[in-house]
Image 1: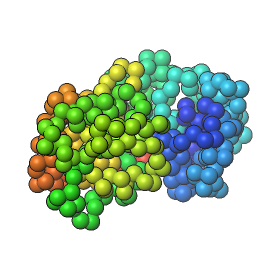
Image 2: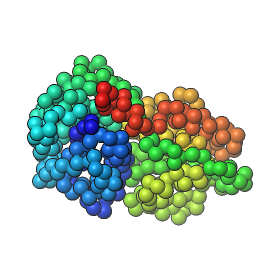
Image 3: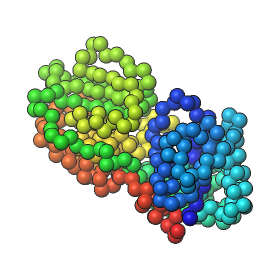
Image 4: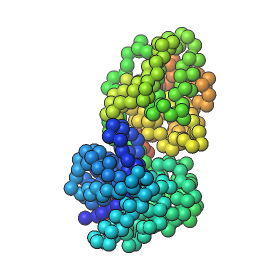
Length: 364
């Protein structure tokens, strides 16, 4: 049986029991589940408070071994503890087939300096959800294997840096089959619904841009449009904007139906240096649902609409102009939505089988 040791920064933090699982957390838990289902023996090194959540979300498969890594409140020390436990396991049972690094994280650097390719694992696979630092590059420079980046802008930070690993781009929506267009179009006289989806408490998601654009629509256009903002920890009220609805965060299972009730998606994300989009899973979810997308000009969004499917806008005024255009042309909405879905199906559907075969254990 093939084996993999899994180190990921988020699993080294103490988990609050009431905290919602989002984004990369869900992706990694489902990846562990899928790898186990394909016969890989996965050792997941994590802060002890994660054990209940990990076992629940993965279904506690026989191939999964949860290894506590207690850093006494420090994720960096938890990483170091995980590395020591990993080395002990490798000395006892032989090297792991692969070291799977779930993301870029400076807090993993001490652990990476301790581990040794060949003795503790045969190859390393990094799933890079974000840009790297020079310190992290130095820590992985000699690791044989592969960097799997979620987008070309992320991959660019690894290319040409003298890594022993090669660099590829491969990422997508894991449960893509749940995102599909509605069986029938909404009635012609129904309000045109625009949506923004994501953790909208984060300013870089640009919900304020979407709201400003909606308010700039000509009154006659705005009267037949709606703006749906999902989701906030504490949804604001828009008493002066009857066409605007804000939602609290909901379980990921409710997102596909939410999107099928929309006519177009807005992705006004902006680069705020410290925080930025590195993939935009919500944009791809909208694309898979067959929604036309009005998006900002940041690179990870521009690359997704190079074959059509979207309209690029920079300012609230440009977003408003694109919204007005879509609101008045159902044929254009249908055309762009079909283009967006075709691109997403071709490029952005995750396959754990492909990841295992091509990236994690290609010679198993």
